[in-house]
Amino acid sequence: MTGTIRTVGVCGAGGTMGAGIAIVAARAGYRTISFDRSAEALARARKQTEAFFAKSVERQKLSAEERDVILASMQSSTELADLGACDLVIEAVFEALSVKQELLGDLDTICPPQTIFASNTSTLSITEIASGCKRPDKVVGMHFCLPAQLMKLIEMSPGILTSDETMQAAWDFTERCGQIPVKTQDKPGFILNALLVPFNNDAIRAVEAGVASPADIDRAIKAGLGYRMGPLELIDLIGLDTQVRLSEAFYPITLDQRAAAPPLLRRMTSAGLLGRKAGRGFFTYDGNAMFGA
Ligand SMILES: NC(=O)c1ccc[n+]([C@@H]2O[C@H](COP(=O)([O-])OP(=O)(O)OC[C@H]3O[C@@H](n4cnc5c(N)ncnc54)[C@H](O)[C@@H]3O)[C@@H](O)[C@H]2O)c1
Image (cartoon, rainbow, N blue to C red):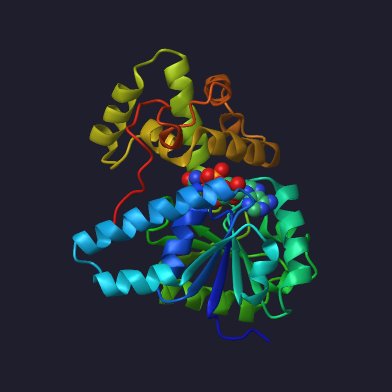
């Protein structure tokens, strides 16, 4: 049986995606428990979250009272055991199959049998991730877009063993959060990343080949294709380290050369130029503010 969702756990909530996903759930009235193995990352995410909601009040999207209620409903923890009370746990930890499988295996021993596990994976198989736990019928793909607190789309994908009941409960949850779910198959990259990972790597290779500067490549894509954001600005937002992990997860499955991490991406990652979160990637930034309100 799948019960009513009241409490939502977010794993990797100190990260770029997890912090935004926790905001989405808390803003919709769910009690939210943010878990990360890094206390430092959680503290940073909490500061960003407070700043985000402060802006929401400033822009009159929320009253100060509503903001206080939401923030009070958001708890942080470095203890996985604290997720034992969750009806839904959404994982947004590193894009590595073994890390996600191990996490679900651990959650299996902590959460009651009816708890649904959702994965925010961008490229990995939901069926393979689900094989890390003993409840594959309760595991579903729930791929948010960056920044999760602003972007409405969620790609929803069932694994081979995901029950219809789980899929429906997860789908209903996304709609109650005010998001826009679309159903995709459990295929590498779903819809967005199947198109984006190779495209973004192409843009990096264009920089590497000296075709144009990052600014001019982005300007061309925005002006010529009508995109709101250029690919290099987007990679800076995604995080260059995450783009490496996406490529490493995607390339072996698809054998698409365009999905392989370009050498420049690896060099910049090794140099700590991780994009917006590091203050420098293809462009430079002042601080690591969270987007929007
Ligand atoms: N960055 C994006 O644009 C984007 C978009 C959609 C989906 N995703 C997916 O979201 C997931 C996270 O990506 P990200 O960019 O937020 O990564 P990130 O590196 O910014 O954050 C990952 C967080 O997970 C934590 N973590 C890692 N292993 C953990 C574990 N075993 N237990 C608890 N915490 C752990 C890290 O401390 C870190 O805070 C990945 O699966 C990625 O594919 C990313």
